[in-house]
Image 1 (cartoon, rainbow, N blue to C red):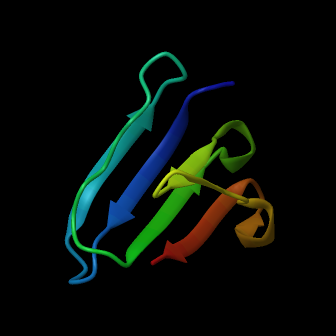
Image 2 (cartoon, rainbow, N blue to C red):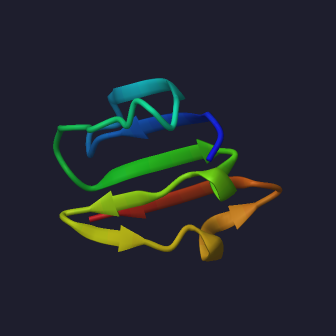
Length: 70
């Protein structure tokens, strides 16, 4: 796994997380769902939401994932 850039917005559009995530330092985000995620280097990231893995492949183009989780 490599580092990746991540931005997470909560339901009101407020950014609750933005930054570089490194494999040795996983990030946990809290806020009000639904969350809108933008993830650079999506192929190197694993996302779980409420304990369930999220498949980023359907939401990824040019190794950038854009998706909403509820």
